[in-house]
Image 1 (cartoon, rainbow, N blue to C red):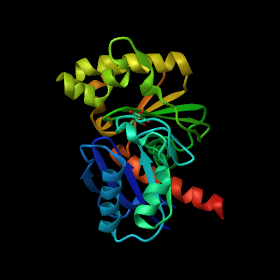
Image 2 (image 1 turned 90 degrees about the vertical axis):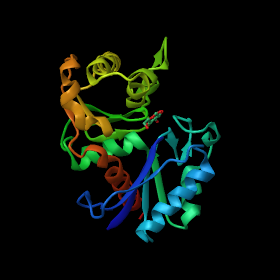
Image 3 (image 1 turned 90 degrees about the horizontal axis):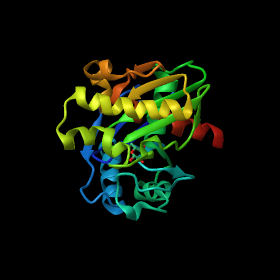
Image 4 (image 1 turned 180 degrees about the horizontal axis):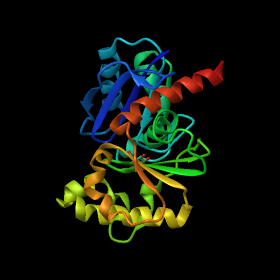
Length: 250
Ligand code: BGC
C-alpha cells in the first residue's frame, strides 16, 4: 500500500510516497520550508500543499517534532507555544479530509531505521538519535517503540536543555566545526549512556551523513552506528507507522 510519509521539522516539512510494506520511497522527496511563525494554522496550510503536490488520497503518516500522545501535542519543542494541547492528528486530517496518523518525529525516524534500516533485528535497548534543529530520540526495546523519550530535553545549566548545546542548530548558531561540536555531542551521548544504559546508539537526521567528520570525538563505550536511511528515515518511518496503525484498527 502506498502511504504518504511526512516529516515535519522546525526548519523543513518534507514528504514522499512510500511503499510501506517494503519501506521504499517511490517518489522524490518534496520539501517546503516550515513557516517562520511555526504556528498550527500556517503549518497545516503547508501540509495541505504537500499532500496536494502528490495528488494523494490515501492514508498519511506524520512525524511531528513535539511529544505526541493520542494525536495531541504535549510539548512545544522548537515550534510555537500555541501548539500545546492541539490535537495535531485532527487538525491535519481535517485540513485534507484524509486519515492521518501522527507520532513524534524522532520516534518515526527510529521506527523507519528499526524496521527497514540498520536497526532491523537489533535486540535490547536501542537509542535512535536524530540530529537536526533539535535532538530527537527514539527508544526501542527488542524492536518495540517506547514512545516520547525526550532525551534532548535533559536539563543543561548553561543552555537550559542539552539540545540547545549539542544539536545541529546549536552548531550553526555558534559557528563551530564538527570537531568542536562532536565533543558536545559526545557529552550528550555520555549522559544518555549513563542514564539509560543502552545496547546501541543509531544516529539519524541531517548530520548523520557527516558521521565521519565527528566520529573521532565519540568516546562512549556503547556502540554507535550511523543510520544509512539518512534523512529519509523520518518519512519512511512515519508512513510505516501509519500502515501498522491501519492494520491494528482493522
Ligand atoms: C523535541 C522533540 C523532537 C526533536 C527533534 C525537540 O525539540 O522536543 O520532541 O523529537 O526536537 O525534532
